[in-house]
Image (cartoon, rainbow, N blue to C red; front, top):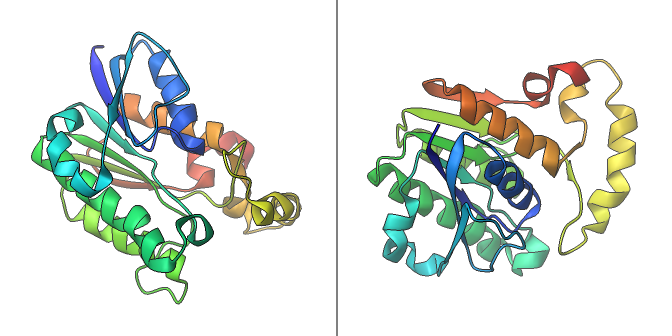
Length: 217
């Protein structure tokens, strides 16, 4: 294969793991990272587009490719306010998806969250649900939405609440009906995204933990 992958948010937990997998995949000959900061990875297949996310229209050509992986995300604490978090988690990702659709990208991947719902009482889940609905409406030939629970792994900024809750969730999720809420690593999610990019199924598909990792059920 001679595919081009575009990764939005390639310096975060999932995005950085995904870049590593993509550059070593024989299916992809070109991997483009669109981010504010340069990725830590250096590889001949990898190019970096240093983007101003307030002016994404200026980088439309950088979105040309076979797959767009949207891995951008932040927390309210990191962003400074709910409005600032929404800017990153919804506005930037939606604008990127719109540009990718205009550029004819056939396969769109989104890292969302378990429980995403535009009608949720949780502001975070509401944002995730609104973004899902908006990108689905863009009608990519193939849309793959991943809905993990807690994501674990090394981050640039440590999230203490997640670190403390992960062992508790891991234990609780052995109970019947809770398997889809078990924490997984950013690398596991990245691997699942890569595998789905090689399959290519048309239309919309949402993936939860059990569907991504049947062996772990």
